[in-house]
Length: 319
View 1 (cartoon, helix red, strand yellow):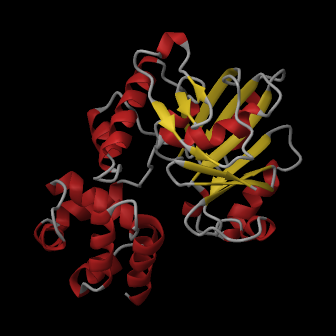
View 2 (view 1 turned 135 degrees about the vertical axis):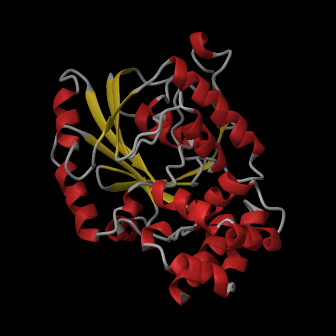
């Protein structure tokens, strides 16, 4: 239980602090609550994560107003919360991450064919549909989508090579163990509850992105990134630059050997590999990046660090 408590203290310190006062408070409360720690200890390690617990409680009982309300919710609705946590995964489909990915995508020779592993509902497969505000440069959504497409804000360092236009994407597909469907109410409610409670603008942009995806649904295939990626690579058009990308996905592959094997399977293929993960996922890549940014994701291209990217795509710092 001490390991679980430390996981929640770390979440409060590195992820929630300055971003969600409620989640910081709840995480610190969990870390010192014997009852909730016992509740979590009965679950597999991959089901003990803060975002999963908090979203499950919100789905079952609504957003708690305090740590006391949260404790009561877990105690009084433990069976329902357990059921959600055991059948769902976080799958936070944050389309704002496209603001951090687009500068790297736009540097590649097009046209592009995108494959996203761990794609959730596929919202990050539509980077050419959205608008972007990087402060010193703005990119409006393409004309057909301007009435509904969200515009994502992202603070960028001076060195970031910002694109003048959207990249040309001629083919796209996603791979996920449990794909979500934005046309299904239950999946939509789950995605909405994964947005942190104070992040009202994020929720509004998510809803706009989901509406866009309902009208322009990307192809998503059920499968495991460790065994089923090859068939999608074979399908991708030969006259396009294939990009395999993922964000906050490989951390859920518990074996470091499996992560490293996945990386090795892409290096040397015709695909460009774009990884946007916690620096702990690939320690060798993090070592190349210099000073560690524990509160940021490390964005790398073909195994070379390129930038530090905030988890929700709200900041990008070029290396």
